[in-house]
Length: 132
Image (tube, rainbow, N blue to C red):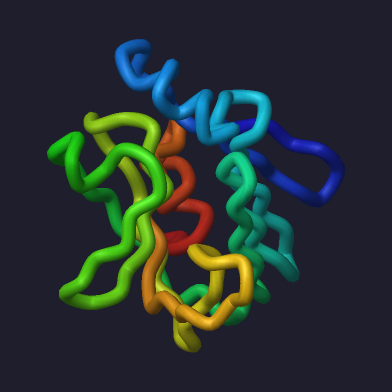
């Protein structure tokens, strides 16, 4: 996690074995970041972007480990329409929203009630979103 004035950002954890595949999709450490301010949550994962007002974030919890088939890359759960931006199978943070957000398709037609991100410090992100 880093700080820049009022914003905090979290880099993604990249497992070496998945880097070549993700890089083909434009997903690299320099194109992936979670930025959190008092007003906004911004998640960039290569060409994919999720934006949400901070007040729309209902909570967060730690999750993982994951199966590579279900976690690496951009994935949508058919069970609950949750979205995953995954670069590691170890651990991540699942962010829940009051109102579903767009982020998986270019037109913004699909809405997701939750977003799982495999950031470097998922425990710190969870604490920032759900303090206490």
